[in-house]
Length: 87
Image 1 (cartoon, rainbow, N blue to C red):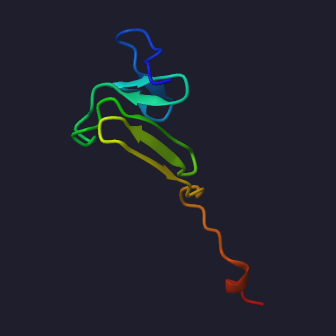
Image 2 (cartoon, one colour):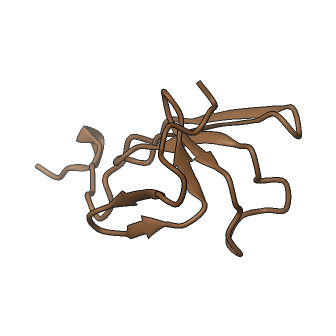
């Protein structure tokens, strides 16, 4: 699951962000193979994914920490609660 499946020198890429140098892909998510300046110091070896609506998960074998954030909120999309509507 946490072994890079991309050929050497090929990195993950997305239409809006382009190539993510140092980021590989395992069988179920992304891998940080070479941390970027934006990553924290222990990021090498992390297994993670980020969804379109803000849901994110990660596993850090080096630190023994895992996390899951389930925000489910599209950027710039407002969800007023029924009690806040007038009328």
